[in-house]
Amino acid sequence: MKLSLVTETYPPEINGVAMTLSRLVGGLRAQGHAVEVIRPRQSKELPGDVPPEGDWLVPGMAIPFYNSLRIGLPSVSRLERHWQAERPDVVHVATEGPLGLASLRAARKLGIPVTSSFHTNFHAYGGHYGMGLLRGLVLAYLRWFHNRTARTLAPTRQMVDELASKRFERLDVMARGVDAMLFDPARRSLALRVSWGAAPEDTVVLYVGRIAAEKNLGLAVEAFLKLRESEPGARFVLVGDGPARAALAAAHPEFHYAGMRRGTELAEHYASGDLFLFASVTETFGNVVTEAMASGLVPVAYDYAATREHVRDGVNGFAAEFDQPGAFHAAVKRALAAKLLWPAIRAASRASALKLTWDAVVARFAEDLAKASEDHLHRTHR
Picture (cartoon, helix red, strand yellow):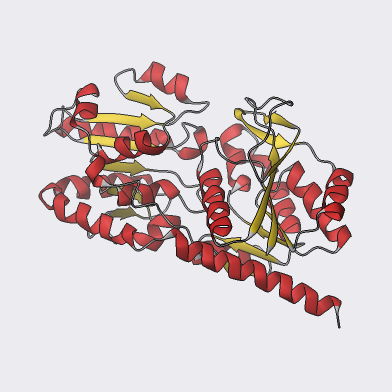
């Protein structure tokens, strides 16, 4: 199969969508499929630079409020010429920005089947950036966009049901895996914990992700401060960066801000923590939850997305009723009350994550793409 995957985020950018797409692309290529990635040129990639093999780069610009992320500038005619010269069997559009829209239009004009995936609740972000009135318009655009593709893949059955209730069509589940060889409790580092000022018996609370308004970090901070009342030696370590970091660091200089981490460094940070607090209410999945589980942490998060799929309250983590701050605080309290059981909970958390292999996810994705291509051929040859 020859696939063109279009995305406005991809490594070396660090986020769940970029990581997921990289895993899918690598897995498909390992299976012998020809995969081209069409994406914006990132800020450190100069026009004269040779792109990575298999990548076709287009001009891009920084996203307002998120200078570290870029969107691709649209060029329907350029995409048409490219695909006329090298026609793919399927175009998969992973992001709904200008590049994604141009790709959708070009592929439909050329009669190439298009699939899409729903990775980000952009319609839920507006309220965090003073644009709540745009929520309905953004949702309408996302529905219009995805309903013009042959199939839209979402990460959980819950998300599929939610999108269906909003009149999205032709939906299916594309699950998420986790690299349990990378994210492993064996990477726990005493030296790293010492650098955070944590003694062996101290609880290290970890957060991994963007430090941004839509991640609801204020609630996680409140929960940590309450926890610290009973455990003065507890430490809060935040791994990641984002527009809210400066304000948070000014308000709480006692927290440890590890910045962006990749690969084994990221895995060591995960494994060196104890309790993983994730208060976000805007996720479509939340890869960080399963990465924390693979690393043997005790996760506390709202009961939706990855948590709904994989966390069993009191068994391999703690789940709180969705978007109820009081319930989140209560879940943290339950986690602390069960501290003697943490070794068993951590082992169960790790065991659950070991079942989530990327190989199975990639195989299912390949089947979905092949089915879209076959259905298109049948329709055009009737």
